[in-house]
Length: 291
Image (cartoon, rainbow, N blue to C red; front, side, top):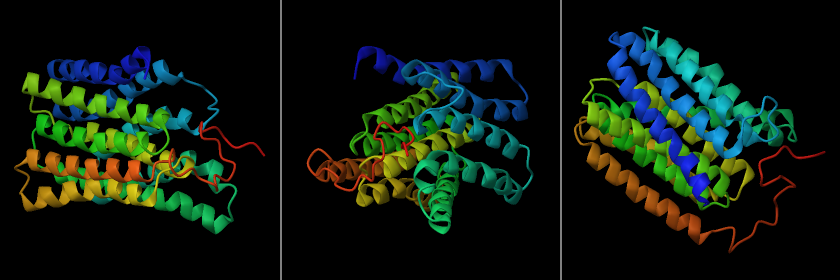
């Protein structure tokens, strides 16, 4: 990775951390702070994306839609924070999850029969819902710095799964997500603020899901790698329940173990060793296939 690219990957961490410190100091109302936090991660990611890949009003490839996904997730998290029941929150997220999945998989889903294409959109949307619930459940009752630690560990598993599955491009974008979460965690530890990082982790989780979705549909991610990286949020939730939300280090350690297994399996079935013979004509640069 070139030094300039590495700088843009790290940029969201700096911006998210500084933004956290600013929100903690400037906004006293808990509701306003909860509404601002999702935008910290989203805008920090968009800034990193602009530096690394540029921004386009008319995206030419599916990775160009990642900023749109980030902003949609921030909007959904903001609206959800105003709801008084989990059911209403789920109703806010349902169209966002389906819309984000449609943006990301449309090039491949459009080539399939209607029922198959609909399934290709619906299943990733359901996976996003499970991931969001799991990360929230696993971080319930924790301080912001502990939430950041667990969120960073989860994001690292996405980086490893994508980067070792034939796409350093998406791995870099996942790295920006991990950097943003790390920046939040460090800023939270330094400021000792009582802010809840949950809304911000919602955006990070959505972006991590988007990176895995892109790698599965357009690169060389093996199904074993997909299952391992997909198991990370539920394991976080399970440990959070078993440990009564007291030991973030145990969750982070378990996540890192799964990350190691993910990397091992990804290397074992590396596309450099076992090139795909059924790429289907899709562009590994994540552009829309030409007809």
